[in-house]
Image 1 (cartoon, rainbow, N blue to C red):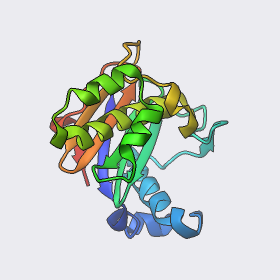
Image 2 (cartoon, rainbow, N blue to C red):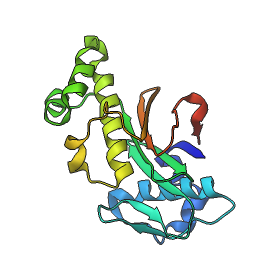
Image 3 (cartoon, rainbow, N blue to C red):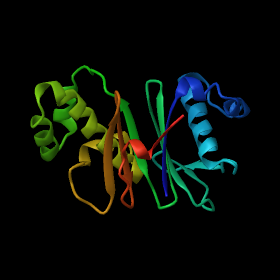
Image 4 (tube, rainbow, N blue to C red):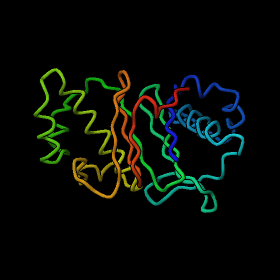
Length: 193
């Protein structure tokens, strides 16, 4: 079972569920995304409470060993995504498709030869969307492994492996998931709060 949920940080961090968690939330810029993520988890697991969350060596959050679910959260701008699974470790990434200074230089630095080929096959007006498509796939793979952002350069998102990698564009959002069993991301697979 996979559950993929999208929401708005501004809405979820102001939800009554978030107010219950406010004392545990970090201060500063991370506060609202943290509250929104915990609210998404609480809604997805309801009526069960959110189990204790621990962090791996690279900082990937996970439920304590006794809980049979794996999850991953990602946010970009005011958008946040949750991928929940009972099938094993998962990774997800969400990015608002937007201009980014030096995106082509970044692609040159971290994309594999095959990823560059994929980017170059796109029409000029589609290259920015293609950049974010490839970027989110790479991030989802790294996050599934529990790796750090610095490992993105070593990932080739076009490489066929035992993992399933799926991408979907939802409006101005580029979404990608990496799962241990096949899961195709599409409109019917999205739950939007």
